[in-house]
Length: 140
Image 1 (cartoon, rainbow, N blue to C red):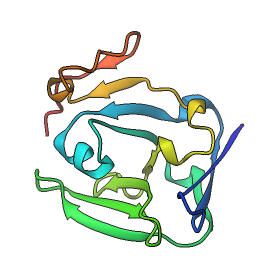
Image 2 (cartoon, helix red, strand yellow):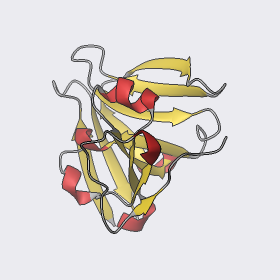
Image 3 (cartoon, rainbow, N blue to C red):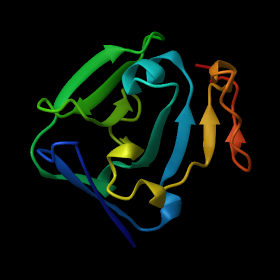
């Protein structure tokens, strides 16, 4: 069992992530334009985990829902006090998975990346991460 905790910056929102194994999480970088905007940097870093492995232990997040540009609704949960982004999920995954923002974990190094998505949009100065999968794009 892997038991992890996380929070927003101001700690108004805290959560617990309980995984049967580290293999239950798929951490990946995403270089798409939506992730760049949502994360405010050149890529997003999330860990896909089973919905039942995640629970809030303090506070309640604010939710934002919007079309991701391809006709799919993306839900993002964040702290309405400090603005920290906690997690996201798409319409098709909402009953099964959560994509935890790895930087919100108290020990983010516990879930290293297994892959990169939308590599065709990777910043020219950013090197490819060796030893993980690389997808140039995702076909809808």
